[in-house]
Image (cartoon, rainbow, N blue to C red):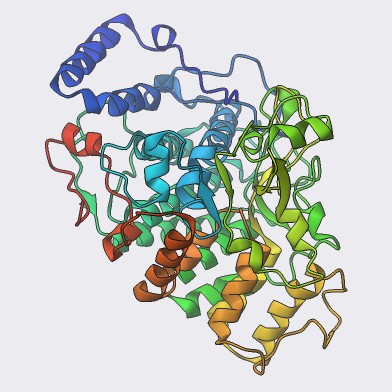
Length: 522
């Protein structure tokens, strides 16, 4: 997939600086082979990627600007903001992100005959040298650094009559929203992190120790609070106002999710209350991820893809078998034999009769006489070599309703929020009570059990399940995961509490000369 991130170092850095930089790279490379990922990251960090985002303003094809010259006018600033939106495609729109987060949960499993390092992340046997962890760490820190550049330099853009009112502060708000998303991804995966809030252009601050998770969460909350104060409710009119950018409601919804994950239910409820009533559930569940049905009335925030610009979604090609792709007439996509990633046996038992979410999330195919499951959520029958016309919905209204119910706990209002989601799942009007569908305090299980089950059914394969599991007690999470391990695999050791976060990439520790430390247990 073409992310547009193709910096040309010889054109961007004066020769003298380039020679100095490459000498540093050589020294670090010969010092330790595993530090190569950091060198590659820093090369990318020195150049700001500025690429058109789907439905974003069309600017000159000269889309990469010398980082040292930023930002002399509003067009360059918007270019840079578009660049970090575009970078989200490579972070969230590949199978790597899906494997490390969704397949980590009990929703999906990986083919045990797949590449060894990939399989290890599914069976909780990965080591600090696992290259998949290196890649996701690097991708997110590149995104963070590009956001840091905008946050630091946007206030210096000359404010004249050509700059639209509020553009400068709004651009900083957008960058803080995206930085918060990236840090939220990393802190849930790795725990304590190096906290980088200034642009990185050299190796001077490479030896940055990890900050406690509490400090990472504090920055995320601060970033989102700032974003809420400056982002608009919607984008309409103006040369720089386009569909797909972060809104005030998107920042409020993400803040609610962050606070819920951090155990601050009251703060989560407050943030989510601001989003209630601002969106609507689509009438048909299947329409949420239908090709071309992007940025809908239910969508709060999406990562945009566009095959017309050679930036279509590609990760879904790995989810469907080649026989299904062929029968649907899909030009590009499909995998022969047993799929690399597929729904677990347990997942396929969670839906009730008549629940329309089931066929929208998984289906079965004939693999040489054996009926096996595949993920059916992201299928574009018109997909070709440029990918699918399907956006990744990061935040949507059904998620908001269920988070609000979880934050508020068991009461009549919370049951109504859950039941709105359930009614739509059975093809009924979300706002009309239905005793045959609605659940209540009389329904089996604790309230949290019921909310978590509904979240699993509703948000399957949307990268929420792993963080949902981690909100349970450690013993509950381990019980669920170990049960899934025992059901899917043989000879896999029990998962321990320390494995609920990933190891820090060894290359990051090596390049910092041990200033960055490893998570306990690894």
